[in-house]
Length: 366
Image (tube, rainbow, N blue to C red; front, side, top):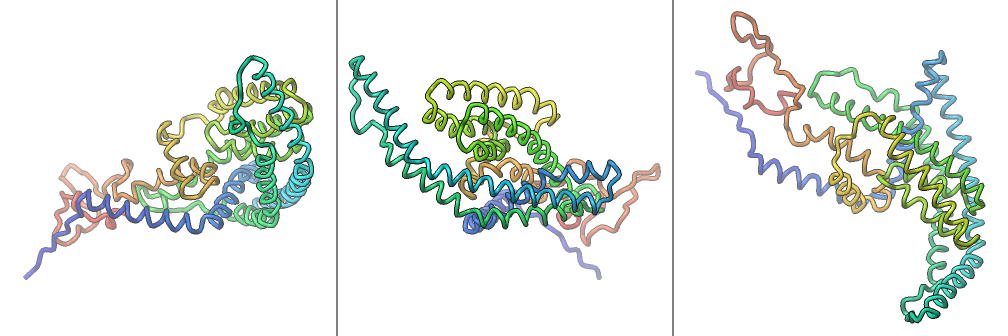
């Protein structure tokens, strides 16, 4: 005597509660391990940025191993030289802090005198304290100098990720499978990171030339920051603030406004004219989703979360059908429709008819 076993799927509310609780636990774990997670994710981001280089070399006739080896060698040498230049720039910036403090004090006094000449009294509590501001800046510079060792380790991780990225592609292309969704997420993220990284590198080099032309101190440091902020929506506005203030303190408002104008023209044209043509279609994320992603990942991973928000959100977006248990729209049932009727290509679960695939468990569909 056969026994029918019915399989009831949990209610949508129950699945939503379980999914939310799981995501909360994962977010708490990521926040607790934020320093290590940020290091790994940033190294993966940089590796994905230069990953198109071995592909280009391979297309030009170089073997795959030689292309990856050459790219890894260039990344090691270039990264080590960049870390050396950044260390010298930070050291020089730290040495010049007293000069910047004196210039900031003179600037504050000059603005105060002009306001008082027009009959506007400025309360002492509202006046910026140059000593306190430069003290905070000095603390940040010290923290950055202490991260040199971390930067060297990140450079090693970049090389290792660069060697592993080409083998992430899976041979399982069955629509709806977990590996297919992971492959789709990897392709989308690598496309975004690769194009955005190469474009951001070109813009950073142009910004570096502008700063060297104007005479801004620590130009290489601000160019690196401009490159990293290329992954943040409208990040160029934030990246131009430090060099503008530094140029203002060093050379006055004239050169500072020239720097600001050139920066704005280059970055605005690049972000709104050139980048959309290179990127092609949109990311499938609304403006609200981008803002919420910046806030959410910023809470979980700290300031580095803003840099990684878009790649991480794209990955979560691709994996969302798996997390929610919803079948992807491209998935087709394993049946063949013939003139004689419905022919099932596999046996149905016990107690479930072949004409009711909606009652199947999600594990049967993967």
